[in-house]
Length: 145
Image (cartoon, rainbow, N blue to C red; front, side, top):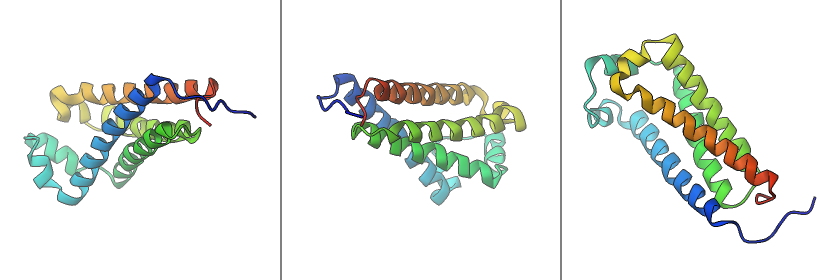
C-alpha cells in the first residue's frame, strides 16, 4: 500500500503536542504516586476518604492505570512520528482508562471519594476517545504510515 509522504497538517502537530504534554503529565502523576506515595498525594490536599480509597485500590487498578498513561504517551510519540501504531497505543490507553473508570464508578465508592473531582475522570475518558478517533482518522486519510 502506498502511503502519502506529504507534510502532515498543522493539526497533527497540535494534537500530537498536546497529547504528549497531557499523557506526560499522567505519567508523571503515576510515577510520583507510585514512588512517593502519600508525600505526593499530600500536595493535592486529599480528604481522609480520598486517601482511604487510594490505599484500598487493588493491584490490577495500578496496572490498568499504568497501561492507560504509558500507552497514551507512546501513542502521542507515535502520532508525532506519523506511525499507524499510534491508533493501537491510544486504544490500549482507552482500555486502561475504561477499566479504571469501571472500578471507580461501579465497583467502589470512587465517585463519593473523589467528591467534586469525579467529572475529571469523564473528561479523561473523552480525551482518550478523541485520541483514538483522531489516530483512526489520520490512518484512514493516510497521514500515518
